[in-house]
Image 1 (cartoon, one colour):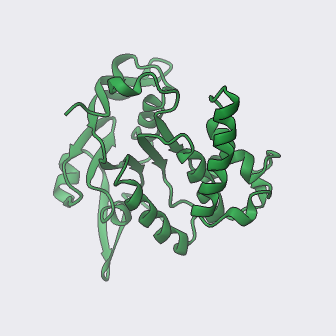
Image 2 (tube, helix red, strand yellow):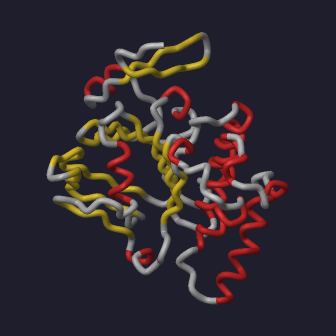
Length: 248
């Protein structure tokens, strides 16, 4: 089976300083990959390389042959804290911006109908005309997930989606992702393996290099062997993860 996305011997960084070196990874249809690692280890750099925002110094990122002609084969949900809340744009227009590369009248009309459908599915149709700056963290995540799904992508990438999300929507989000994963591949970046381990299927530990773990069950010894300085800590029956030297 040909992978949906193939990363071959990727070295990428900034100003000739490599952040990731010699990374290899394959993502197939309906994969659900959790990406973990310390701050500064290269998680965001990996996403930028996949999204085409960073040019590799070595290696390449290849999409499957049937996706290379698609304008938007990837849906992307960014971190809420990186969103400009002061930008004067409504919820409806934020979601519609996911079709910005559509250039026919019919495609634009269909996209508008799709926006309303997605807003209803996410339970935020009643705020379609609100300014983006008026939304709560949970509402914001719902809106940007709608935007990410507008182009009907084959791969959905989520960058720390549980940041600033209320507990109720966190459960709804992972249930939604479970259903989406029946049709599309998902890459979920998180600092908290304790939260994502029950949802993802496989794990990639990123810290200058990438170590692929072919299941969602991972031990502290394996994390240490992958050069992934994360500690798994259990509080009662609920697993919790912090980075080393973490301060409250």
